[in-house]
Image 1 (spheres, helix red, strand yellow):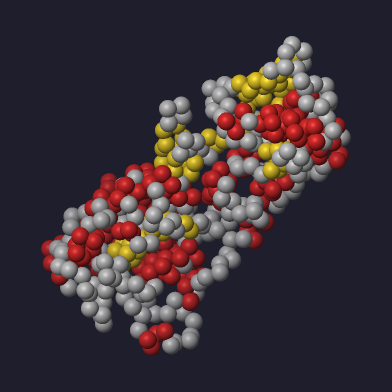
Image 2 (spheres, rainbow, N blue to C red):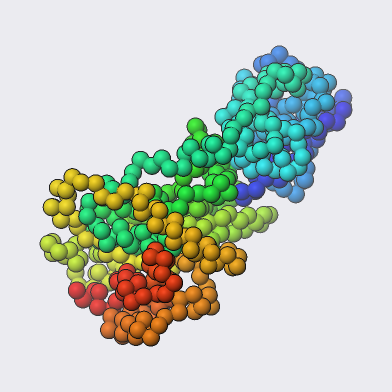
Length: 514
């Protein structure tokens, strides 16, 4: 007897429906799984046999063939245990088959029949709805995540026996209901940190406000203990809230990577990822034998913070150059090619020299001559070229630390950022894929960032007197446009240009001679 059950394979951040055909014939005792399964799928026979026997059913001892179609797509992981087990029981006439065709079923089985959680429940649910299935059966730990998809009945199960009882009598389980919009709204603005915790550092907070308003990448450079990491971690609190579509995109990536918190069904805040500097280039960019999202994809729609930038391996830093520009990463293997989204703000920090005290107002630098330049040269020019703001962070004076009054809260700064983003959304509404000033192309830059005669003279003088590099020119125009948007100014004024020029410290040839 041939029985069909339905599962799903996750490739990248999308799912593909899989038909699992089970044929049990009274000829021999062999068990075959075909259709390009990996080792975890092939090993499922032993898990399934034990689970079926331990709940009081019999495992078919006949010639059994399990075909997973389409056969050209690799099936990986243990999440196919549950649909294969149900197919075996139905094919051996121990289970009613009427409802099997109406559900996508996924789950890993323990030897006692307990259903273990899986990865990628959200993209699987999206695909199940797209394919027109009535419902989805997944482990209970993944049910709320999958239930974020509307117009699909999602059933969470903890044991193989529950699934069997449900297929025999559908009233034994009730679908999980999640109010997607209420869940999204409730978790958006709850932050454990705030900019009002930061003492002093007014110019740095202003620079980060400009970065958030225009989506600009930023580099914080200063001595240890000056507050670089503290400031960077608060950047997400002033970014515009995630839209529901962005939240779903971000949740899909974290679901596929297995990084979704156990008690969360939807990521409602912009992610902040801060990998250690010993990270490999594969973990940063994504990949592996079965391609998985890397840190740059986990930071999609949020912030990727690289602390101690020169300590990262050269290879890890260089592989980021293309994703920063294209806002996606393509990973190709011999048999498949997947694409992960990677639209993130890059924020980095570093000491100005190996000892950390170059340009310190009070402590002397003990580094050997030339070591400061060699230290910064660990970061390549092409990568530095993709960072719009170079911000010098100086130590906080003692009198500022002793000031117990609260600073400006993140909510107030975020309101200004939102106003600037709304101006940019209207400006770029006719241009596909461009949502903020940092994404402007060179041709669009010339249209949007026109300067008056005084502005042209100032920029020309700055390029000559401060010995700014040619690559700083476009960055200055983009940042000055954002500074103007924060004041709702149609014209880029002198003060906006001056602020943008001030935030290109490392492009000055005389910076190292201070």
